[in-house]
Length: 177
Image 1 (cartoon, rainbow, N blue to C red):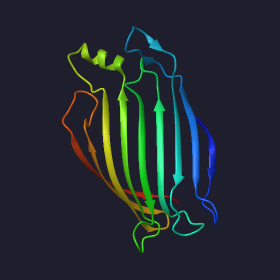
Image 2: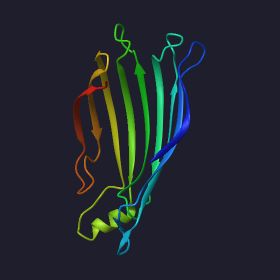
Image 3: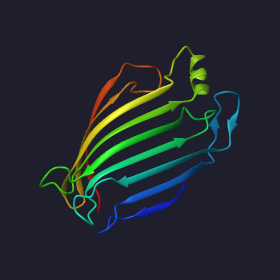
Image 4: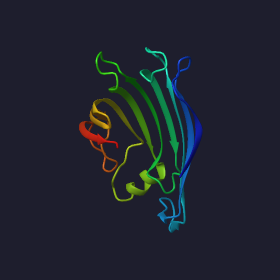
């Protein structure tokens, strides 16, 4: 896996921006969905961009950000062949909580038609795509310790078989030292 890009930190007269792109290559054998045999490799690519839209305090990383991302992987050996994601997040949205982060995001994941045909042979069905809408908040408890809570609506909570929409809640304690 490798990545390249450009990152500019928030400064007195500039907002934060981070553009990146990368790829992944794996030599593990993967079964093909559309023919017999296995591949001797797998790969994928992505591009992402994060821009600071507002800067309530000059030079500080606080404010509203827009994060966008797109991925691709070949559809003959990957069930998920791509996704697009758009997230708005705000650092320091609430008074007295300058290092908390609140985010609202949307993701659409695309499912390989070759995978759908493959599982269809077993009388199973997979969706063409999966949509998710998430809202989360990261509470900074102290330096390096965050408590992250989020709720996600997803129109198909698993790949096979198709299921009804679900609302998922998750809570995580994140330690970074």
